Length: 124
Image 1 (spheres, rainbow, N blue to C red):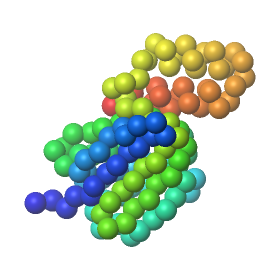
Image 2 (image 1 turned 135 degrees about the horizontal axis):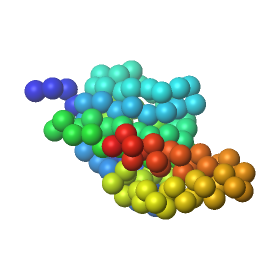
Image 3 (image 1 turned 180 degrees about the vertical axis):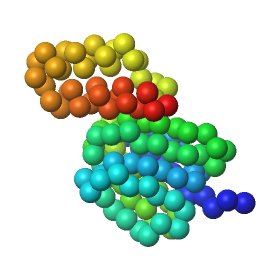
Image 4 (image 1 turned 90 degrees about the horizontal axis):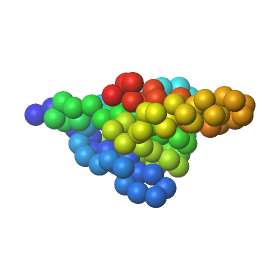
């Protein structure tokens, strides 16, 4: 049996995804990080970006994450995000409209959130 880690992806308002995984890739302030079972303990700050979870069943779960923290110890990975959306939940047309609106208003933060949503869907 392959080694697994328990993953909890939680947003401020809800639990987004929970389960067993073999690999999680996330963007931190120190750069992209991949966490596999047995990784050294870590605590980091999440940047806006896609989080990719390779489940124990061999599936891939992709989420758009905006801010928060990542922690890992004892084969338990916690992603505590301000906002997190599974790629399956993202309305592509709405995200594209938000991106155009943010560009026209020169709203860099909104533009970044919309780009991350679209990247999460594309990577799904």
